[in-house]
View 1 (cartoon, rainbow, N blue to C red):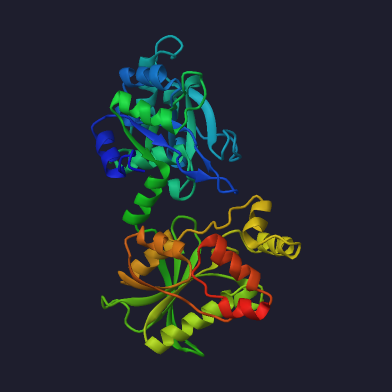
View 2: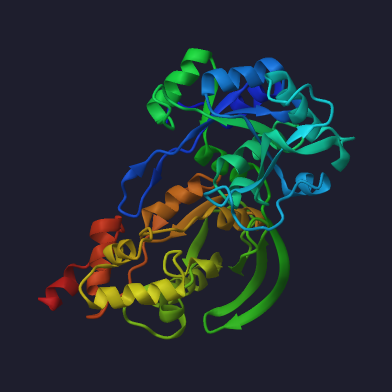
Length: 416
């Protein structure tokens, strides 16, 4: 996405009082078709001016709204009465407000700017606002874009990362027909007005690279049939999910280290299902690490079913019994073929002291996902496990439709 600016460039512009364009970019529907979301013109609330608000209304053409943390709006007694989503796309909207003391109805650009600045003022209190007014309020989810990849969260994240209070003002950019503008229009808009433009996806990647998002909560030693492993339990500070690291040997010595990022599979790892190769891959990875005398398994419990969960996975199994492959079964349920993310897992590896990884996987997507988070993948080590009559079609699908490096010649020959 060379047409887009970097997050550090965007933050530098926000610090000097400039606006930026923030795009919900490069999303795909369950069929893999790219869908382009909306673009918002974003500014830091602390620096709001009448000229800036007027520019938003004239050029973006959407009404300016304020995005803030729940903590800020709660302190001002401006939270909505319930936590149910009322603004669409899981954003939570509160009643619009005016600052006490605005002239007339508070609808002018100057009055809106005054209200926006008052919303972020350290000495502001509940008595400084009246409802209804003309400045709409949106509540960002805790965790920002790492919890919900929306413009509300992204604008609040940008304000915080730029060094200001986590309150932002934004306006939806509309095209000349009054419709939500697509990416080509947004790129042209940014060029026309000399503005930086960035994507929410890039902001997510930036935060995952630059912030510590895990906390180690337990450590012990566990003997296994493959030898003794140190076991560390981590908790994600973004979504509270647990991550388990099984560590053998000294892995913080700077040497290349065998690593398996293993997505939990209750049916394969525990129940002995032959419909997949997950349990066999876990066993093989443990054996390879034990033979080497050093390495790490990161076990990710909420990755069940490539991120769709155990119930949806069993529903997909039934659709596979009816003739669909694993990709089409997920799509038939309205789910992506792979919903996993390895950013938090990469932070576990960083906390363990790893920087150079020999990745135990047949899935090249895992390599890309980890490299995006500052790890050097020096080698992709394939995991060869025997196929069986029940999983041969599943393995073919992973190879042919998902790009996995799986060699099935002998097994396909036996299948006839």
